[in-house]
Image (cartoon, rainbow, N blue to C red; front, side, top):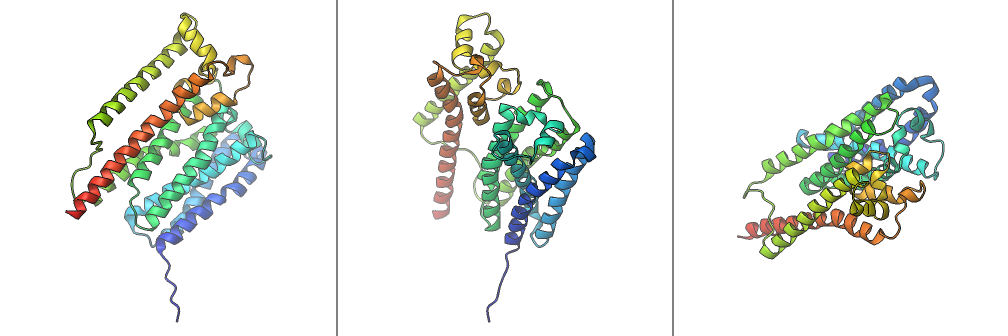
Amino acid sequence: MISWKTNPKQTASLAVIFSSFLALPIAYVVNYSYSILGRFGLLVAGSLSLIFVCSITRWGVFEVRKPVRWIFYVSTLGMFSSMIDITIGLENDKLVSNMMTNYLNTGEPYLTTAHGTMICYYDGILHYIMYLILLYRVTYNKSCYEVGLFWAGSLGHSMIVFMPGNIVGDHNLHPSIFLNIPYVIIPFASGYMFYQQYHIQKTTGKFEIRVESTIVKMFFAVLFTVLILISLFRGLAVLNHTKHDIFAYYIKNVEPYLIHTDAYPKLQAQVTHVGASLRHDDGTLMNINEGSFLFWMINLLLLIVPQCFLVLACHYKTTDRLASKTK
């Protein structure tokens, strides 16, 4: 006789993935109900949608042990949002139509900006992949520490730029902006939980990021110092580009998007900033011309150097852990 054994975590993961795809019909219905719902109604409908998908996950995680249940709930909210965001990005680029148009006009119009579009693609693709990795690792009892902290830092940084940019930028704010509040809290609370669980589960040694080679340490110290100076220079360029020739040249020929009327570029300098810089075609003021090489060099350094340091640090930490087990 064949015995079918179901892993409760597999059931929970499938429930999370299934609930994320419900974002498409829910978005369509809410979009076409805006004339009935009104602006406050959109907020209520969005909140009820989040509660609904979490209730599906609650059914799926019923037999999952409590210490890891929260990962499934967080993934539910995140993957649902990712599906909404990828739909918004595609709608902004006219690759789909009539899915989110009314919601964007009366709910969150700032998502139609260059930065808003790029952050939707970033969340809809990269963060969705991170959620899938999280689900895979928690389902098969693997450590979620590294990918969990990386995701929490990525989402947290996005929201630190996104929310202040919405508030201080030239955008009409509607009640639907409060739908973003959970996604401001989740990455920081989750990062703390990942960090705490790592220390609870770890039985040997003390956690520390280790990079053994003195030469490598000095190399990264120099690189990070350069990046800090570059960031300070960019900030000064935004504030003083009309007063000094070097700042004027940089703004005009390297990163004109920094002085766009949107507040996002003044706060952001990673993937979505690069994408938003390239998307803008509001006349020659926003074009990248003769300074394009410098633009790519600066932004790729800001993007790649921290990731390289993280990979190297995790490599040494893993090697140290394996060495301790063989003793």
